[in-house]
Amino acid sequence: MKFEFLGTADTGGIPRHQCHCMICEEARTKGINNRSTSAFLELDDGSVILFDAGYDTVCDRFNTTRIRAVFLTHFHADHCLGLIRLRKSVDGINCYIPDDTQGFGDLFMHKDSINYQVLEPFESIEIEGIKIVAVPLIHSKLTHGYVFFTKNNVVAYLTDCASIPAASLAYLQSQTIDHLFIDAAYSPSFESKKHLNWESAREYIDQISPKNGYFIHASCQTLLPLYKSSKSLKYPYIDKGFRIEV
Image 1 (cartoon, rainbow, N blue to C red):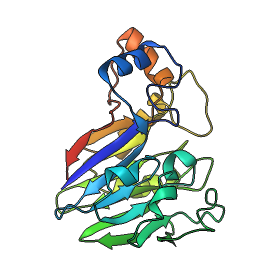
Image 2: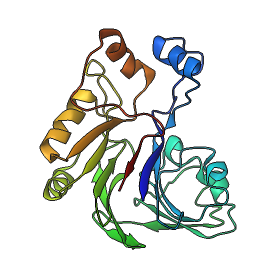
Image 3: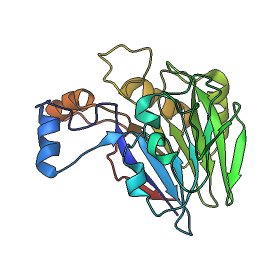
């Protein structure tokens, strides 16, 4: 069973349109196209559970693959755009969401094959022996992170967030987390009420104390000062295609 990222970047992706910084130029040279942050858990039978659906070609990637469910963190376009095509699936697909009554575009008006199910804070769903828990995060839209439990590992997927509420932090600290992925969209020099930076994200990882911590949701502008200074962080930014066995 594996957990893999379809993308680990922010909305603009890497390389960013018409950006010619060293990060974007290197990505073009290497043929890298890092999309918005989203991931999937591949089960032993080859079916998948999606965490976010902002990857706009998700229907192409999993065209003949059974999608057990989608766990949507929030209804910003870069996390739910793939649902626009996915809703035309022949299969019915459960999509677990925070209690956001606005959604995105006409996704609620034309649900088609998508069955939206609201998860309350800390509510859990079990799929094929995998327990998945909704963990509230503070963002500009109602947002959940997710913690999932396999037979061998506990994984936390925490994007997007500006902060973690006290109850959520206490819950995360009470778990023995093997791998924690957290929003670190910005450098500390950029103030934001929507996202963490690499210092504030590092502080949360230290407080939660997982066995392994990783940064996600970066832009080229976040990575550029690290590239120029060869600065080493305590926890790494990961790239599209990053995978772990769980």
